[in-house]
Image 1 (cartoon, rainbow, N blue to C red):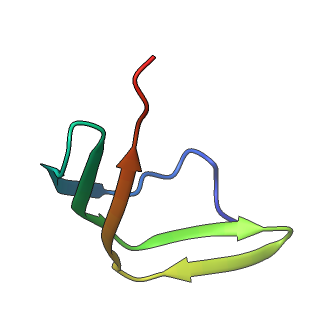
Image 2: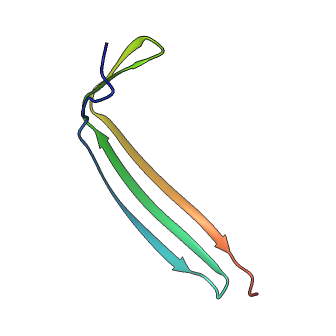
Length: 68
């Protein structure tokens, strides 16, 4: 059984670029990275162990606004 007080080393980084298309529209490009070192925990009595969970997230978005 694992304690809720166990420590897990994590770090992350990200970058985002906003490109203005018009006065009211913009495109957003982004990247985020997250690393969780080895983690062990219990879910509903079942022990779970994760080894170096790397997450890479690429995102693209379009925002459109209207003047008030």
